[in-house]
Length: 140
Image 1 (cartoon, rainbow, N blue to C red):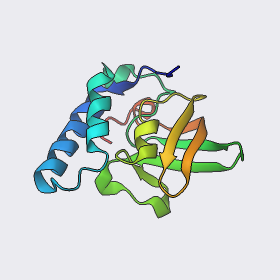
Image 2: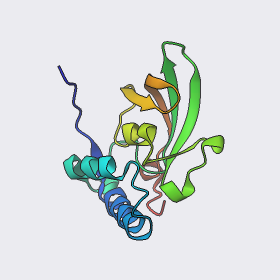
Image 3: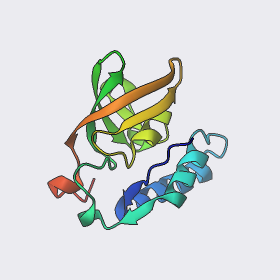
Image 4: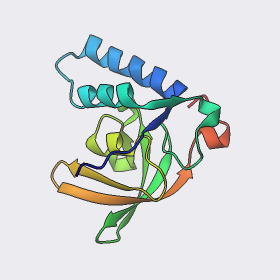
């Protein structure tokens, strides 16, 4: 049985992500890692007004606390656009497998992802410590 979840994205995130994908394909057509998967995700997502997104949904530039299953190890990450990614600083690109799993996820949800170098991993989205929309930041 395949588990599916409805992914809700803000209208601003969708516009910005579509622009990002177009720019990547225009400037680096050979570097398409994750772009097709993100495009599929955008096509199937429910799009909601930015001011109407629930405060427990991961949006772009959100900071989350993940708990690795079963170890219980906690990590704090910020979901960012590819140009802002810096894994050493906990800034994860939306094009990465983990980034694509996080976008649109809800607090309390278990996300499953194939992490390069680690294989299949499961994380519980324990906390959303910052969401731009909940903070009235529609410029991020």
